[in-house]
Image (cartoon, rainbow, N blue to C red; front, side, top):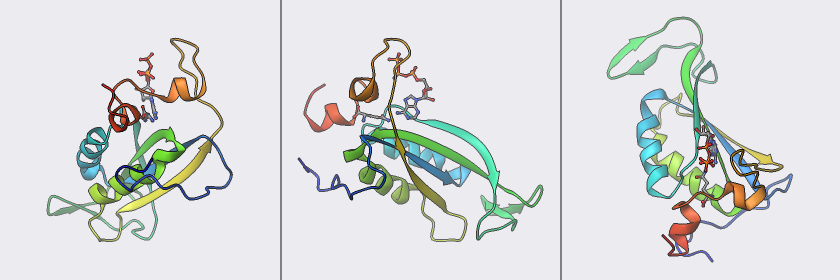
Length: 144
Ligand code: ATP
Ligand code: GLN
């Protein structure tokens, strides 16, 4: 059940079968995060360009050694990944591993309960809609 020891699930509240992991990250870490997620069998995710401020405030973003700032918001990428409950912690671990620099501005992750998933093409709902061919479940169960 926990072949690699990574899929222990805390009792998230409110309880749901699916959760959306919403991560606000540095744009230049996104390719690393995406590679890590693909490697672990994540096959569906959505990204958008966003702007915001946190502890980093409007201080200039450092990118490739040079600093720049357009206005008081800092450009970030929001990554949204809906997964089954037992995959949430593994996804969070991968995001942290691939996104963390240790400097202010590394970002934040929100875990949001999702009531249902519907695949538009087929009308499937729930687990059938959330599963992706060749995805993490298939990989962990040894399927292809
Ligand atoms: P189909 O089998 O019909 O292709 P699918 O489940 O692969 O269905 P798509 O229609 O290819 O889904 O997905 C459309 C968009 O939905 C993707 O480009 C992505 O932005 C988003 N998406 C799909 N799955 C997820 C997910 N699990 N989490 C976040 N975003 C997702
Ligand atoms: N949980 C899905 C699976 O194991 C993958 C979901 C995703 O890629 N976002 O098939």
